[in-house]
Amino acid sequence: MWVGIAAMVVVAILVAAVLTDSESTTVPPPTATERNDTVAILRDAAERQGICYGWHLQERYGDVVSGGSNLGDGVLVAGHPRCPRWLQVTATVVYTAESSESEDSAVVTVKGSPEFDDDARDLTAGLSRFGLTEAAFVEEPGWAVTRAAVSLPLLAVEIGAASPEPMVTTAPTGVPTPLPAAGSDLWRDRSGWLIGATGLLLIAVLLVVVGLVQRRRAAAAVANGQGAGVTSRRKPGRV
Image (cartoon, rainbow, N blue to C red; front, side):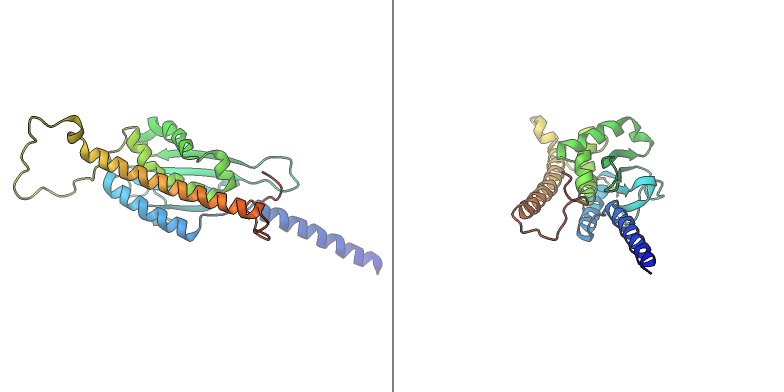
């Protein structure tokens, strides 16, 4: 009898250990609010620049955690018939089990249609300027991948792959606009470009700043003992 009870206890412990390791290696997706806000921003950028933008978050072995684009939550741009030109942030986040000596890791790349092949490396490197490093993807993958996606339109403008000015989709009507006066200077000629670039920059910076403030407040709450029962990282004790 005692042997049977001992065996059941051992089995229960093993099952609990397996379930704990399984939960600890699960990569969390972006929240519904993060996804919806990102789709709206990407939709506006796509209409202005004629480029589809999106994100793709996956776990080890390529299991999809989250994906979306200007076409909607869950709709990927790669190979989509409505997106001949596209850019997408692809992040692979790997969480290791508590019992493993391996470290958590993340691989982040920007992929796109063929005309962006030469710019992919510069676009990927540009993400770090917004604090979107591999460490940020390990810490908060859902937040990081959506923030990276909304940074793509600005980065595309910076490298000259896209224009911030709205695309002309219909033929002009009415009286043609007179040519600018001979005294027009450099800034006046490029006012549309500057306004568009400034708008994209403000949107991207605002989202990044809001996200960083939220993360710092959450960290402060945990440090002050106000975050009891809430785990900001999937692995307790690992910084």
